[in-house]
Amino acid sequence: GIVNGMDVQEWNPLTDKYIETKFDASTVMDAKPLLKEALQAEVGLTVDRNIPLIGFIGRLEEQKGSDILVEAIPQIVKENVQIVILGTGKKAMEKQLLELETKYPEKARGVAKFNVPLAHTIIAGADYLLVPSRFEPCGLIQLHAMRYGTIPIVASTGGLVDTVKEGFTGFQMGGFNVE
Image 1 (cartoon, rainbow, N blue to C red):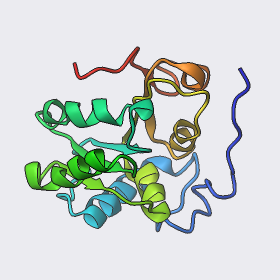
Image 2: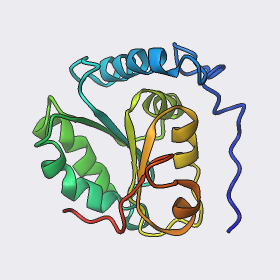
Image 3: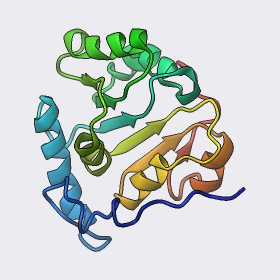
Image 4: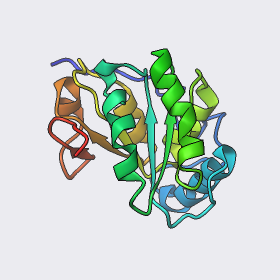
């Protein structure tokens, strides 16, 4: 299919006004740990560059798979990982998102509001970005992640299959489910 284009001025790690540490392909390995620490500090997680950090940015509705993600959180946090979820949508899902910090204070944060600066901080600071969409004609979030050196983990659907090359630019996980 035809792949969406992204705004390469808005999503440019060398000039991004929302991140403190600017970088390019030659400096990404030095910048990513600093950006992760900045994200952890901003959302109130333990600051530790050695803990894998997973991000999710998207609408909180079934199409985007956020219901699957919320159900999977108890399994995810059993591992030595942290997760930050940013999104708005269905009120019941927003409520579940806001409860993450209470349930998993050392592991998870949920932000249920539209927040462009935090979206940039998550894209720049996360190690992985989950895109568990049930269907996705193309999507841009995985392109943003790749541009910022964040590994997309995507459902094998629609344009995500066209843009994320398994084991090269990210990982395809088939259809997402709680397991």
